[in-house]
Length: 112
Length: 119
Image 1 (tube, rainbow over the protein chains, first blue to last red):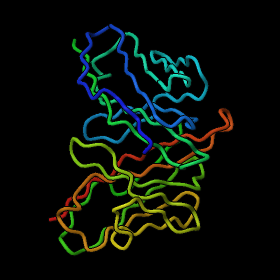
Image 2 (cartoon, rainbow over the protein chains, first blue to last red; image 1 turned 180 degrees about the horizontal axis):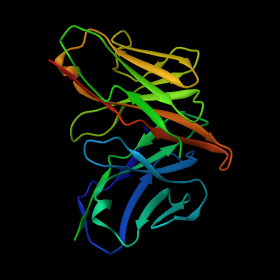
Image 3 (cartoon, rainbow over the protein chains, first blue to last red; image 1 turned 180 degrees about the vertical axis):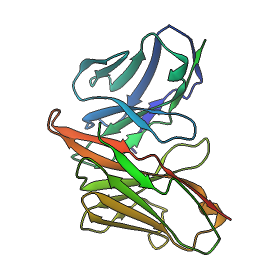
Image 4 (cartoon, rainbow over the protein chains, first blue to last red; image 1 turned 90 degrees about the horizontal axis):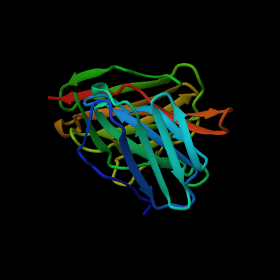
């Protein structure tokens, strides 16, 4: 059973601070890693993807990947109340199972 | 990013009737689309993988005769919930896979979802 694990939270962070979201995965064959944001009652929105070890930055978001440790994280700098949502980590082995495996999501709350 | 649309955004139907939901990739061609279902406060559940020009692959426990999927073109997949019952009431979300020449890999984008209520 290929698994993706996330801390379900809730994770509470003060406005302006850095929010750190973590994810581990079991399938060493995984090649593509995604972070989605899902607001309550809405569908998931792709905010970051990463394929290579190291860091990838996009605005206030930084994704970090360590394939040796099977670990991927998302940092949100200067957190805003609008960042409050559930963050889903998803992992894919497009050459294998051909589908995303999702974690259960981490609920993030940014406190003004 | 790529844009995926769904129609309708919400639908109310009577028990025993059928409902069709459309999923379109607006600015890219999607050989593969996915259909998910999500109940309140629960995780996404993959129902089936839809491949253009071939039969859909259903996840274990999903009734293929109840949830009919047709992926007739590279930009359109449809999900028909047949003989709907109140327990089928849920948030149905489609997703399309897009190949990125920049990254050399696939990225997956979600439609806005369809909220189905069966009375």
